[in-house]
Amino acid sequence: MKIARIRHADGESWGVVDVEAEKVQPLRGEIADWGQAASEGRAEFEYDGPALPLGSVRLLAPMTPTTTIVGVGMNYWTHLEKLGVTERPATTQGFLKPRTAIIGHEEELAYPRITEQLDYEVELVVVLARPVSGPGDNLTDAVLGYTVGNDVSARDTPSPLGGFDLFSMKALNKATPVGPWITTKDEFGGSGQIDVEISLRVNGEQRQCDRTKKMIWSLDECIDYVARRMDLEAGDLLFTGTTNGVAFEDGRWLVPGDVVEAEVEGVGVLRNTVGPRP
Image 1: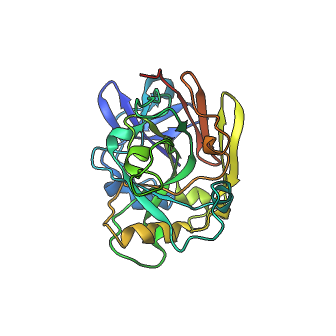
Image 2: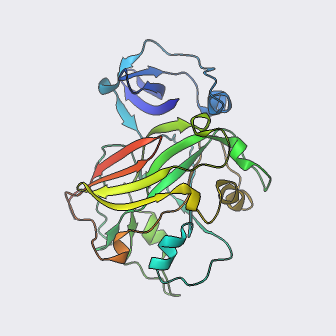
């Protein structure tokens, strides 16, 4: 099933989306209340009024004010090769994003004033159904489902110690699209092994395309990396890395007016337009 965060006449809530019927059924409660059942395909919801036309609601980023956003990188070898990496890294690399960085489907993607090299990165994003604390096996048992992320990055942010300043690169205000909804884990077989296509287009031209089976680090390993360092809660988001084809490889940076479409097979298309340069 597909579950979205929506804004409608009565406020904000989660809702079950029927894409074919173009309807959305508002729900009561939060992910902690119904997420584990939904991850297994069980609709154990308390509904909140009648179904609404999908066109009458605004699709928000699938998160709440308590959501923590974590990213892991260096997860597709094709991407690392293009960046000049010659040896497999011993571990992934993590970072946090502020909630102020996140925008939803069809929201304007801000062009931050600190950069002239604005890049795109399509990613599979994991949404948790329940808390995870510490390392363990089969951590994807805690996953509600998956959504689409575009980890937009500023590439001209050097660190005084060499490499990139990850804070300046990743914590860009209103510049990280996520959405349009969550597709629950049961639709992908229910296990931690997921093989779907991820792709990204700029103004209709395909720039990125790969499959999640080519990840260096599995979803269990990505969650384990984070859980060894911090507790995770229901509704938290985990970006799982991007593939090759980013603008850093050829200098075709995003510019104002570009329409960026990130897509994950089985989830949907996340569309945003780049706003004006300050």
